[in-house]
Length: 329
Ligand code: CP
Image (cartoon, rainbow, N blue to C red; front, side, top):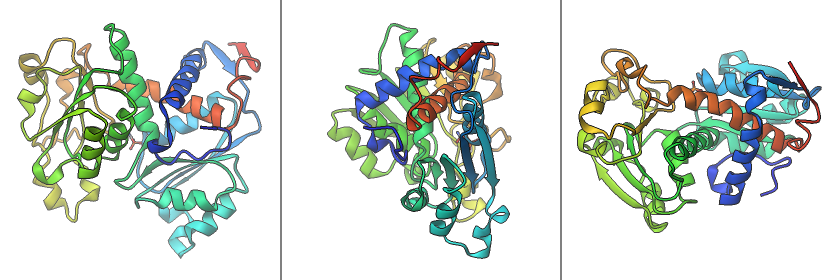
């Protein structure tokens, strides 16, 4: 695909070569993310960072990624802080804010809302999560992390095994990641959830059509036995009709050091898109794994910066100029 000026709305827009390009550019961002060098390649450019749903790492890492390339960030956080609360349409909001920014990142609770916004925008729009639909940049950073973790073990993105655990119905990160995995070969997936929170059938069918082996189960312990990656997710309580309904599932799948040690292969990698729900009644990924070398959750968040820097550089057509505008710290 031609990245310059493109919207990033869904992982379905990517071909395998696009992923290779994003990851190659992300690799070049390491010295800037580590503060070994600075670059001002986006000096003068403005990111409109609009988050109409809570976020910590997506919002902040989009902003930091843009800052690390020399650009400036303007944020809108929460519907109540914008004129959407006065009934302004996404169309009008997009027309206005795209006059103030060079690129816009947006999170919104409704599926399809970011695409609707992008259709009216005069600058590229990146989907930071639209309801339960997609979270394309999370899937990219997850896949980048999986690739790095597998490479450390002499493996590749073709022919690996992953267990996805939790609320697979509402989890936009797993929806996007599964669709992205359809660009690769012979992935074995174990999808672990309560039956009511199963992965949408359309996603499962796409994986199977592609030739991937998909197992669906509600049993945690046998599912983590023979996999390279365990990808835990939170019960997305904000997507349920009531807290009481979400509470029926919170705490259903708890991965801790004891269960991991007894059931998983020792070098299995543990991932989670975060936030993990650390409250006692949920605790799907226990803090007793915090110092475990298999826990890759903070390597994921660090990688998010690299991938988002790469995307900004590519969307604004400056990826070849990053080094030219660089100097040592
Ligand atoms: N993974 C993720 O989207 O985290 P935030 O909700 O904190 O942005």
